[in-house]
Image (cartoon, one colour):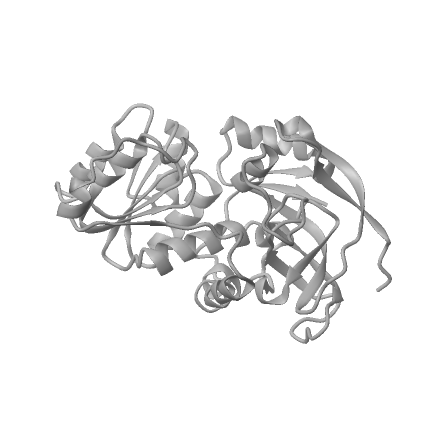
Length: 331
């Protein structure tokens, strides 16, 4: 395959709102050792992209400054030592940056063939959300059958993945969302109870739903004033896992319940973790979840699609918070 010298990509021209996302011409990246070059057909839009756009989440050293953490497409070139894929193979991949572009280099261990029967759009909606949810709900929190989890932001890309993954392992699911329509959607997706956080106190509902005992796990991307309520929602030996802080990372917290209830408070980010760490997650997903994707017992939820040149409009929709599921850029 003859590669072009240049490509269209979306650049963050300066920290700010969606209007700072500008189409530009960039050199086509070259795959390094252990990497494949992907001709991108679809890229996912995620909250970390917004944080990067606003100047709050710079790419890790060595990563592209182009936003975009997940892609799907076809292999266009192979880096040294890559034998797992061939040019022309369809893949989806988790990347540390560079997804909003016509071509993107990806570590081979973070690439997977799309699940059987999946379109590129569906495949592109998997990596960032499902890698994150698996790493935090399963690997860090140890969620298992029979336990109860409270998932915040249930109608988001992360939330819709977390609801399905928790149900797949046999857990009870409570979730929060910001409207009656979003709550109904979350319950149709598998949540036992969706709590409208604008009208109800989620910690009180969580305790009521568990007979006063509390939930086993809380998955939180909100932070701020949710932090003490999360602690109140947990049962003894419960686990609180942070994956983002949309309302800020600070709160005034009484830590006595953490000690008395023997709680575990943890959290993680995925983008800066080593390739080996993310490759291990990819292998686990391929073994444990890919058959379920192929059977359609679980599936990414797609909200909307925008052409690459309309990345600004895609970010505006994400900022408005009216979406349910994943926003995609098509190329």
